[in-house]
Length: 70
Image 1 (cartoon, helix red, strand yellow):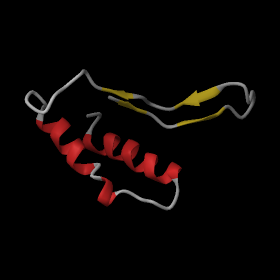
Image 2 (cartoon, helix red, strand yellow; image 1 turned 90 degrees about the horizontal axis):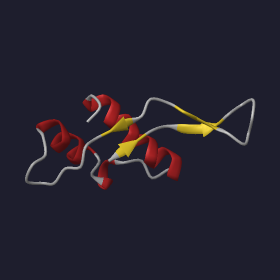
Image 3 (cartoon, helix red, strand yellow; image 1 turned 180 degrees about the vertical axis):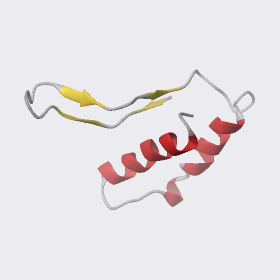
C-alpha cells in the first residue's frame, strides 16, 4: 500500500510534485502489524470526509502520517 499527497508543479504544469510517500510491504490480515491494523481501522469509510474526492483521499493520507508511516 502507498499513499502520498501530489500536486501539479507550480513552475512546470507538465510535472507533478510529490510530498513524502508512505509505502508498506505487502500484508494480509493474518500477518499485519499492530500499526497496519490501526491504520486500516482508521480509514473506515464511515469516518472519512465526503465533501469532495480530494478531502476523502487526504483523510487517508493524513491518517497514514498520523499513525507513523504505517
